[in-house]
Each structure stands twice: as structure tokens, then as C-alpha cells.
Amino acid sequence: MGEILGLGITHYPPMSYKGNLAGRIKLLLADPMLPEGLRSPAGWHPTMREQWGADEGREHSDRHRADLIHHFRKARAELDAFAPDFVLLWGDDQYENYREDGVPPFSVLAYDAFEAQPWKHARGENWWDEPADKTFTIAGHRPGAKHLATGLLAEGVDIAYAYRPRHHPLGHAFVNSVLYLDMERKGFPYPVVPFTVNAYGRWLIAAHGGALTPSQAAKLPGGADLDPPGPQPWRCFQVGAAVARTLARSPWRVAVIASSSWSHSFLVAKHALMFPDVESDRRYYEALRDGDWQTWRDTSTEEAEDRGHHELLNWFCLAGAMAELGRRPDESTFLESWISNSDKVFAVFRP
Image (cartoon, rainbow, N blue to C red; front, side, top):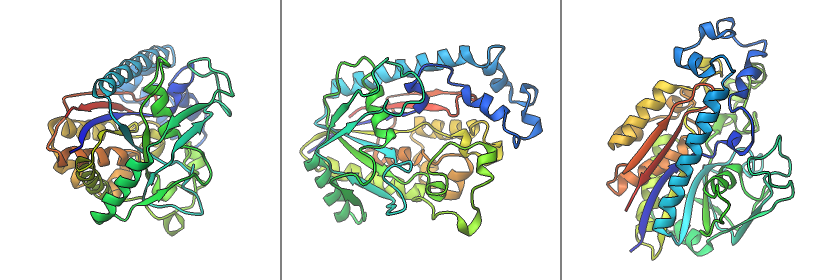
């Protein structure tokens, strides 16, 4: 019988680059469609004001980055102690391979290997000072991926799968996760089975999965002109449970990892796309910490969209898997950040 380790992490893109993680706030303050009441820190939540401080968030940025690096090192230590045969990684496809020629709710990538050049079109200096042509080769695990797809189909989950990419070697949710789990660049020896989720749903094609300002968002289509939604959060929960059952019947030791930040400010319309839904994030974090899976199981697409919880669909898969295994986190932490676009959560569910 298979053994399963559960981990929750983030693939937060700005962490890849040097500089202030709060830079998006200055971009928003220059946007003509930002509501007048948010144009000055006087109109912000006290914690947001405190994090912005007198240095435009630099102190908070440095502390937040240090916390992220610390928890990635802890996650890697858990991974090394478990020594999985392969890693199943839940991540969103942000207009990388999910494009106009096909958008499944979920897919399993059964590649033999993946190659990525994350700095080829970099927007700044990367954290590791690696050259622009640096190539990372990530091993896949085709037997495990095929076993998973076969098992899910037997469970009644109509899963898509692929043996090669359409447009992009591998989405940033997966590449960043591997880069961050190898902060020290000692190598990442574990084969990866990416499990892609259509987290962006109605805004996938129209916004190309991008982070929008209010002015950019105003130009998007609305109503019936939006794309169809992504999978329901409760369906992600069900799929995660089916994954756990399938892997528990396998001959492998598998680490299942959900990768995403939580509420994204640029998806929270009720906050003018300026700050995340911290209150909802805390509520879901407390439910996760306490093993209150009903809160997760009962969530609808409309509720997730209202809260900017689009990418949290990856964590709904993890939540379903851990609920199926009767687990609650052995360790977890909530990193609150009003000015870096999103809150982040790390969690460990040991066998």
C-alpha cells in the first residue's frame, strides 16, 4: 500500500526576483480607476497601513520574504525526511497550456521530463543571480501519472491527461514550486507529476491569467461574455479525496503538494483589486488547522470568486485528500500580508 505525505506551499512569483514585494501597491496608486478613498494610507485597514509604513513596505517585504524562505526550507526538510518516489503537485494553469484550443477542469501531466528556462523573459534580477539561459530539468514519473489517471477514471473522475505540452513546457505554478523547494540549489531529486487545475475559470482567456489593475479589469467582458467557470471548489475536494484513495492503493510513497497563495488582491473586486480578503483567508485557515473539512467541502464557485480564492482550488484538492485520510495538519502557519498581493499558508500533514 502507498504512503502519502501532504504539504501546502505557495508559488508566489515575486519571490523569484529581488526587490520590494509590495511594488504592486505603487502601481495601483497610479491607476486612475482606483477609488479615491484608497489613494491614501489614511483610508486603508490599520494592518495594511502598518505594513506599508514610512518606507513603502520595504521592511515588511524583507520580513515576509525571510518568512517564506524559512518555511520553504522546512517544507524541503519534510520532503527529504519522507523521501518520496514522486511528488504530485496541484497547481493552476494560468493561460500557459490552458488556452483557446482546450481548457479541461483538471489534467494529469504524464511527461517523462520537463525543461524550463524561467529567466529567459525575466522582468528583473532573479533571487539566485542565475543566467538568463539557465535551464532546469525536472524529472517526471509517467508510470505514477498513468496509474493516477487510470485510478481516477475508475473512481468516476473524468480526468484529462497529456504526454507532451501544447504551448508551454511547464506552467509557473510547478516550476516556481520546484525552484522554491530547492532554495539552496542542492538539486531536486524527486520526480514530479503536475496536476493542473483551471483555477482562473471565467477570467482565464479574457485576462490571459494575468494580474490586473482596476483600469485593465474594466476593459474585460462581463456577464455572458465571460468564459465558463472553473471546477466547483467542492468538486476539487472530491477529486482530492479520489486522488488519496488511488495513491493509497499504489506501490509508491507519494508527497501530494498544493501550491498557491491564498486570496489574490487582483481578483477581489469588492476590495478594488487592492488587497486580499484576509478575513476569509483566516476563516479557511482556521478550518484547515482544526480539520473542519465541512467549511471547505461546502464552498461554491461564487463564494470562492468573491473572495479571490481562485487559486485556492489547488488547496481544495489537498483538503479533500487529507480529509479522506482522516488527517489535520501536524504543523501550519498563516503569513498575513495586505501589501504583497496575497496571504500565504504552509502546512504539513505527516503519514
